[in-house]
Length: 592
Image (cartoon, rainbow, N blue to C red; front, side, top):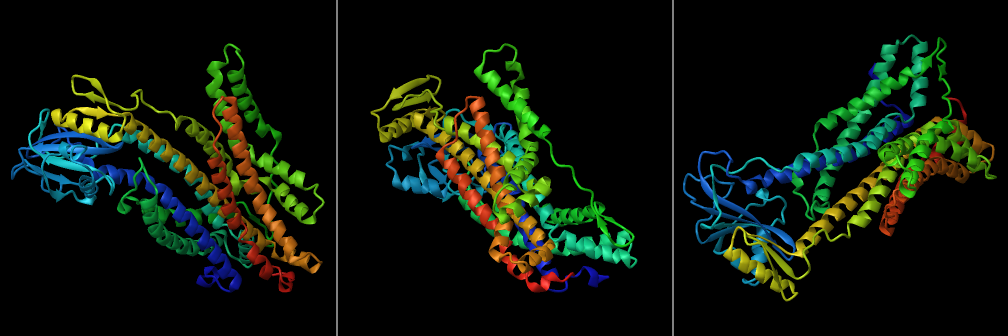
């Protein structure tokens, strides 16, 4: 039976290559999306020792005090240790004794380039060692461990080995939600990639049924045929992921800093789940096909989407406008329900919009436009399926981008410029001469007098909030671009399957006088119109929601990101055009 599922001939190998390439792209994007939680977990695990507490368990003892410090707005960590003996616990490097300092590589470089009265005097002693980069939250972290007794130290029995951040669980939940939003279009794309040239395969399986093959045998053949392509694509996707994760580790930032490449890892179980998903999709797709006694394939026509799908949007957006712009009593409590109705409407309105676009384009005077419109109008749900995630993604990105553009500019602190605030039991504010250097001299003087003091200026609050909102904005833009590009890949996969399934129809059109350029415009319209329409629909609905809630509109930078993502997606979606020349030649006129 191996000869039935192993690819033979140029057409079979072409289908194998396209399926494997689609799965490879899906696996790469899937694993990169899932690597975010691992990256944050790795960052916390590496720096767990820095957050040792009095109740940290262990077999030794060491005097410990960790203080958050700043220089020119950059956060640093100053750790004081004492009573370091042979039995004292170790974080992975020798702890300094009185008069000694052990610092991270970035901290040592800062010591060398900064006057003592602005920084070095806070860390009295001689640098005798370097903290290994593997024990830092990120390669550029500023950390120094100072030996010697200072007021406020506590005794720890051991060094912390696990992170203890109260916000970490909430961060994981947010990342999980974000990953889920990214995974949905990727999984849909993988499913579409495995369905390339499905109609040809189903006709071949129908012929096998005609000569005596059972349903189980045809399902086994389909599963094996899809499985080998999925396994090949999974391996190629894993190789691409191993290369790209190092690029992402150095280019993507959290709190303004990159990650260790070793921390950017996704669970390897994904590599087993993707081929399994492809096989399941391939087998389940056969259940929708009724193979009759003469090997004839019959499909039930799907009902076109109706205007009822618009109703949740009308209720949701209308209700938000009513709550925001009128003083009608009793409607304020319904605002959450109106928002939920809007989200539901955003999710389900796409097929109806595709149907209306197909009907509108069907009235065009161009033959190529009419052909593409009829294809969209015939099955608007299929046209929407590949680009469906775009509506919600573009909607969410537009709404969040508007919020970020407003809140990202807020100062976030009441501390006036040029003032140093000291919290050491005698909370007070010290006015500097307005220069950064003088602020750092004041901070150093106060830190020497009271090592446990928390000393702040306006600068670090503003820088921290700017980095936070920049990270949020970058994540929103990155997610939108990923989803748009993946949707373009999904449309390309669907178009490849459509070209392979309609090669004889296209060949007949060419034989009757239709030019190759006209056919290419048909395929480009079939893939490009849903892509642009769904992205535009999501952006418009996001802007309407912002207006309905009196929210700020997105910036010009967001529009540039959307445009760049669309261009990239359209280039990907146009790849099936290279197949038209060979697939619609005169030899394709004959029946296969």
